Length: 190
Image (cartoon, rainbow, N blue to C red):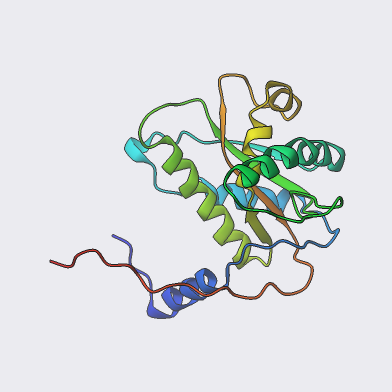
């Protein structure tokens, strides 16, 4: 059973309300200690049958991040085009928004709950980042590039692993405004 004080619960809800998808980062890099705290928070996520299927790759090499971005952009734009959406990102568009750290949560496991488990770990990581003043953003548009065997090899993901949740991290540049949310869509309440 999870019991915390009302004050702590309110503080946690404030973190949840404060979390943003940050798309502008300063040049300041995250250090190893900060990243380990975030990874330690990630692995506290719920997991089906205590499988803990996640594995983490941390990429902070800016040249590698640029190469992955350059590979991901045309795939991303082609998918947008096929879906009928258009984006004018310009030539300087960088898929990782200038963040200095990419964490890729992967798994070699299969099963109905593996992806959910990895995404729960990602949410824990992002909430912890927010609590410590670190920005984060899911970059799902990079997945196709991260699945390329040469890219996987470059960033240390073995062939039997599948990238699931790519998240950039860094210190935000400026403020990221809140976005509105629709009220809960309740299908039934019986």
